[in-house]
Length: 146
View 1 (cartoon, one colour):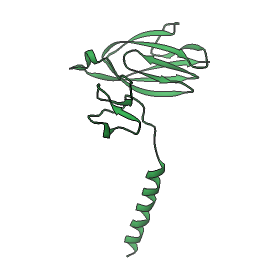
View 2 (cartoon, rainbow, N blue to C red; view 1 turned 30 degrees about the horizontal axis):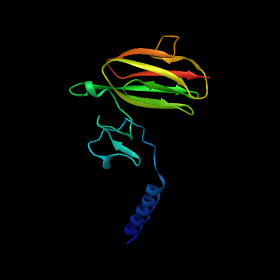
View 3 (cartoon, rainbow, N blue to C red; view 1 turned 180 degrees about the vertical axis):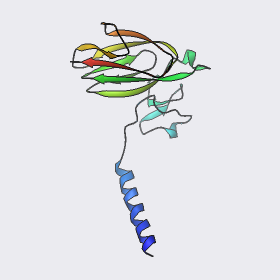
View 4 (cartoon, one colour; view 1 turned 135 degrees about the vertical axis):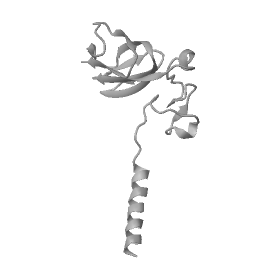
């Protein structure tokens, strides 16, 4: 009987926590085949990723038969990095995103959303707010806004 009571207590705690815990699921980080596999407010888009309505996760022209790799985008400050043809990361403050991209060349744009673009901190060596990288394996790019 004591074990059954303990089980009920554990189940009650889990039920309470599950109702209060709502982690943010970033666009283009969860693959899907139907809308019910996505977090609230997201749809299963044409590229097979959960994302907000209208967000494109990759270049559909190369999706068929192309292997995707994860591009980690780290943003420091108030700014965002647009991964052209895939998604964006950042906005009001520091962000750390995993974005699936097709293997090959990828163009990134650092866009101010409050702070000025300072520099790329990883992956890019240009002094410009636009950067092109070749993604053949998982890699990280970083942008600093001050």
